[in-house]
Image 1 (cartoon, rainbow, N blue to C red):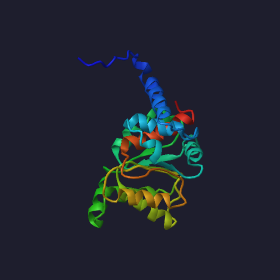
Image 2: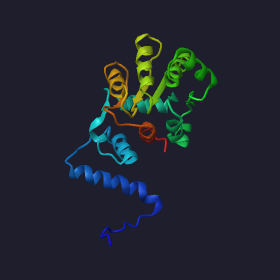
Image 3: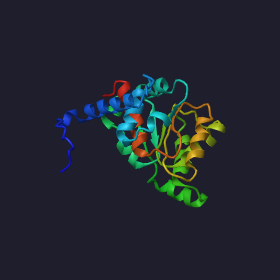
Image 4: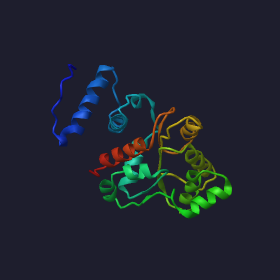
Amino acid sequence: MSTYTFENVRPMDIERRSFEIIGEELAEMGITLDPEKEPIIKRCIHTAADFDYAKNLVFSEGAVEKGIKAFTSGCSVITDTMMAYSGINKKAFGKFGGTLYNFMSDEDVAAKAKELGETRASVCMDKAAAMGEPLIYVIGNAPTALIRIRELYDAGKINPALVIGVPVGFVNVEFSKELIIDSDMPYIVARGRKGGSNVAAAICNALMYMGGGR
């Protein structure tokens, strides 16, 4: 029989206890987090059960402050997947007055992507740019979305309030992230292959909670 000891935690206390465990294990590893970035890094670790996020999350100068300000000032959000869209806390987001967009299922996006031979995610970024408003770009799956964001930025067509760039995978993933890191845009990026839509949503939620959205 296993010698594992069951930890009796009330349902409403599970998240709190999880964050305590994360803090304890980070301390055991000798890792001290920047207090400004700590809530975001811990929420990513909590979401993925992966302590690599203590090392691979990269922040541009002032990204946390700029991200919080963007959310609390009612900036709208565009996501590259419905999973990221679904993972963003709607109650928290609704307190700030922005709009949450996802165009992946739009017929015009599908038609344009087929016509151009491009991914829907890339075409979604074009559609977002055409709205002409500052946006928080939340990318958890599609490196082509990050590549297009960089192209649009270099062309002077967008000025993102924040880019959350954490696509997961192998093809062009690392390259696309480095394009964002090597830009002047405010960003939070998971360097390397790791990431995902759940992690992208976790970063959004952390910023909103830090801004009083919870």
